[in-house]
Image (cartoon, rainbow, N blue to C red; front, side, top):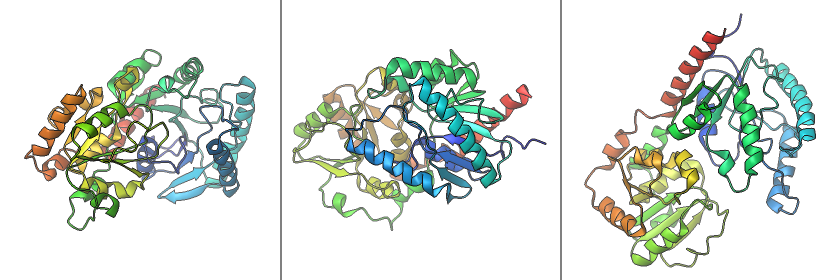
Length: 387
């Protein structure tokens, strides 16, 4: 007899476990509270560059992880790095990978006692493997419009995702625009907005939470941001704000993966580097305003910033450029379309009498547990209809 959908084991293609937590981590961690989940580290969405030390380091790290075998990281969540040729757009490489992954998953199931299972993917390029690995059903959890990332080949990514969308039983997309786009190909597409680890970020309100020294050394007011520093961050905007308000301190937390020369060297811009996820609530406690300074382009309609709900759970007033998903929270986030509007919005946020506790309370119902429970209920209905 087949196990219920809500307890059936899951094998999932995801990003790399050790990277900064994203929805991949939050969703699969939540699912692993009720069933066995095997997280397969990324099998590559692009061809690596052998001239890149970062890419070479990643290859050697993955080989070492493969040798270790599956590792239990928490609850019933297991992380495993499969061997795969890192040429996602080569038909020959995909054919080899299909055979290797079939054998790999067969052995993993034997080792971890997995019978019937669901196949989930957070990556767009695994359509060739769906239906060949022994899964009873397949789910695509779509977290972004992958074809719009500058480091991926657009045409090949679109084609790969099209194959995937035609094969999976259900698609869950992180905002309405993304769901609408994928529903054109797969009618079983549903919106599933990001949740938040409210308990973690509400620690920013706790009296015993200590603001880290590198932030505490800066004078107020502090405009805080955390996230990877990539080309979607509007560095021109940040530079304008920093120059126009030299008494404001801009504290930016995150790995630098693009040219940051437009802000580097400004005396009130502080690049604090990458921090562990569990330390972010302490940094939020020391921020006066949480900012989302993203460039507004075609891709932004498909983005759902995790930090929006995290800032709010930490009690912070939020100022953002007109990211469509942020605009859905007009009572909780101020929107600014120009640099001068951004400055005015920050000034209003600094003067806002709303308590941090009130903002945090507004996010209590938007937890990852609530989001995942809704996904499970939807998926159960779909699969019952197919049986």
